[in-house]
Image (tube, rainbow, N blue to C red):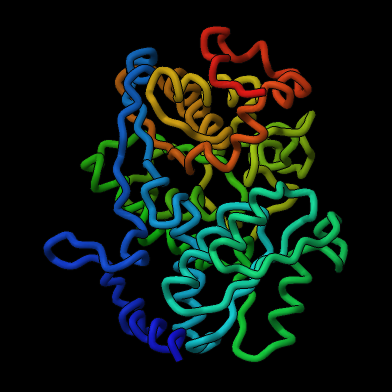
Length: 359
């Protein structure tokens, strides 16, 4: 009964109207903490490039990451379509922040949450999701084309029980819609329309596609640039139309792809950059020591791409990206000296910043 009552607080009509904040600015629960995140000027990078390098502080969302936006819209979409009812179960295949965002939203809205993930993920991630009330089901790592892939198992489980949905973050375009309706308008309003380029790393494709779609409608001259980690196919796809992986694998998590998702299909992308781990990690530690932001390598990749875009465009431009989440989930890997040394990334961290590495 408690779950049903909690869910009714966030009725379909309430969600459809997106009345997450009252007129006096008070947020309405955790759901109300989705979006309207600060846009932050990165002073050091701005001064170095002669451009305004701005970043959405997405760790200010209620669940602590940019994926909270997609999580809410995926649930909202299912409610509006009548696919999910009070007390139901939300199922997803995810190894990262989408699962965390869904777990937070489910707790707040009165749903059960089941997460399938590859069994090579850290124990810390599993424990975090369990703390958030999710049932976690680790499964063997296999390719997307394999029926035993964790995403396909998530879909099959959701289909097998009553009142359950598989949110399908990669190919459910409610993900992209979240950024068309929230992130894109926020960037436009916060910059007063004075934005020349946006760049984001891409996993599902929702953030880049959604923001790009909205901003291009406002000003088709805004450049939309995909930031790709090494080992992903997307940069080659955007530049050459070929799904060919760039060399290597990446320490970044939650971004990079081996296919074009439904969320990314048709996105108005002007260019793409492959960002090496050396650059992403270097920027991650620069952000910590020069700006005070404790973030993960995907954020380092985003900001490194923004700097490269700014350098290419020249002084006087405004480039927007995002700080995806905080560095807490990556402490055991990204901030571990042994791991960094094993991956050959120690030399890219300025020696004076290596004090932040732990043994």
